[in-house]
Length: 103
Length: 157
Image (cartoon, rainbow over all chains, first blue to last red; front, side):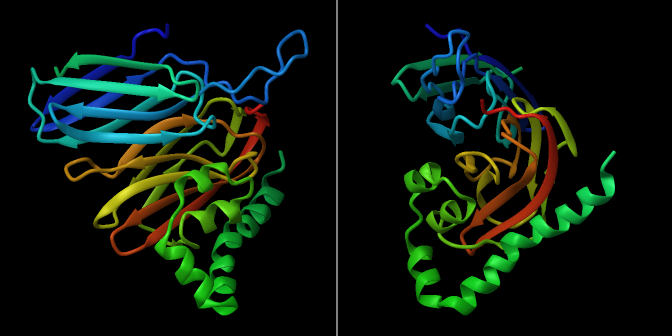
């Protein structure tokens, strides 16, 4: 099971600044392990960030996003105390959803 | 250091995509028009060359100075290259990052809904030194800007 998504969101004057860190190996499928065997590809493909029913951000990723993907973006119309929901799915069908309260 | 040759190489590489635009227009509008109506995202991500990825995305983007692309000129570790993209083009719907020199150049596509700023900061892998493109799609067109980066240790292996 993947580790929880770390979410930091702060609202100021209606603008939320969001930083997300998703612990994930983001294996390229090109790397060899110590035994010389190729490590299979395993990477996050989709990320979605929602505020209630509103999608405020989404991404479609390849393995070219670094291990433990880090995202920083900003959106308007946010108020402190609202819950931000972040979800990802990966190339092996695993998924993770976490929430954070906007500070 | 090898700064002077790097600058020459930068000009050359940055020109590549834009010259491609000229060739595309001269080489046949039918092909461009056909590509423009049907961007194929799955195909774009699977593409193994920059030109194939660009074709799959709907055609060659127009160079724009309204896109800011920041990344280190020298990246020590290609596995973690910090990158920031911002757009001042009205109606920015998508921000895409492409890395020429990666096995599959299209790295990521961000969707920018109404109310979200056309800005993203993240970290990407670069397999080798080369050019990084930030592309922006609006309702009216497809735009891009480019920067080169030297990579000390490649980040895709």
